[in-house]
Image: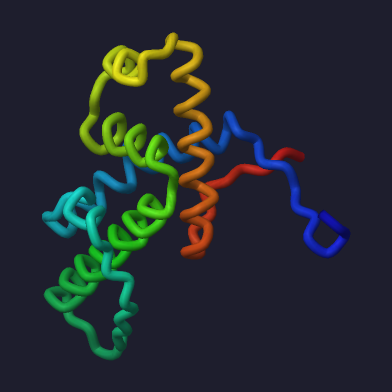
Length: 143
């Protein structure tokens, strides 16, 4: 690309680690806050924006708003995941949402452990790139 659209290179290993941590920690917490699973949003995500006012909010309203915001974020995650390739969707859903073991993953894809490791890294980086479209940057750039 030209000078206008030059971007810094992404550190794939660090980005993949960041996305893994995101699915292990943040997504789990969002699901707990909403009482809903991310898988419930994957078939047809609703990406409608909902606004809220923050004037004189009591603790009950605050808890409700946190749940609504968490629900909205799960929809964003599902929207980003739905725009990824089918292989990326399979890897992320099976490994990070369903929690399938590493061995089961490389056997499912009929590849070696190291080949699956590359698939997984590409999938996590692809998700990070798609999720950035929602204003959430999980990518880590090289210096």
